[in-house]
Amino acid sequence: MDVYGLLGNPVGHSLSPPMHEAAYDALGTDARYVTFEPAPDDLGAAIEGAQALGIAGLNVTIPFKENALAHVEPDDLAARIGAVNTVDFAGDGRPRGYNTDATGVRRAFAHHDVTLAGRDAVVVGAGGAARAAAFALADASASVHVANRTVSRAEALADDIEGATGESERATAGGLETLETRVPDADLLVNATSVGMEEDRSPVPADALHGDLAVLDAVYRPLETRLLREARERGATTVDGAWMLLYQGVEAFERWTGRDAPVDAMNEALRARL
Image (cartoon, rainbow, N blue to C red; front, side, top):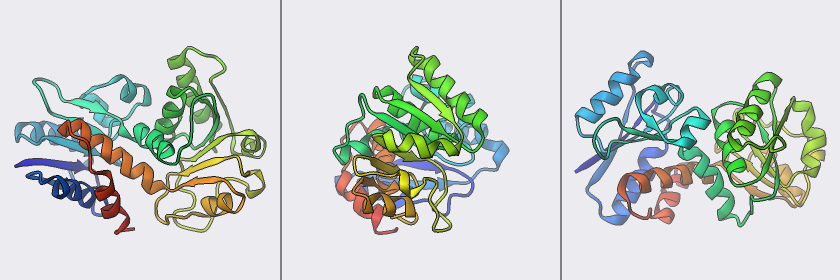
């Protein structure tokens, strides 16, 4: 039996176990997905222990995504984003690290028939989810404007994107006040903050939203945030955060197993718990 798992602290709220278990059941795979909650200072020991025990693969969540870089061999995308959320122990030597959050963004938009190449995108936030979203969009040949409360963090992310792409016009940055002027002319919008999770608020002025916009909100509890509700009312294409969560898990499953993931089964199991 293959064992996969999730490293985080806390992890009791995670929806990854039922999503991955549904995939194993759908394919008749002899595998299990379990959770691990090491102390914040024990991440390295936890990864080494998992490798020694023959764990086949790990997902990594808060607060370990950034620190995991030091304990794996990250691929180019994970290194640029600065965070790892998937670890693969296949092969000899140092485990490989990936960031499938970026894939989650791309595939969530693709599922809704949204084209990224050549589009103007706005990303709200500058944390880990925002970095994954911004690099996903830039790698797909979209131009990215990063809006964040702390402008220096937005500027640092924009600089990293420009450094990676070698294109000085690929990314811009500003404070949250720039949303009022940038969103009306944008094609794509990603909220990568937690605004809308705990209370009925939106990080984006409703008047800036429009019908030619595609909006992805990384928040998945609730599924329809105020941002998505107001965007839908204006005719925009809306993508809830469960799609991003689903497709990052799909990418991890496919990297670990080399098999096509049973996306419908995983999606059904995920949404049944939201």
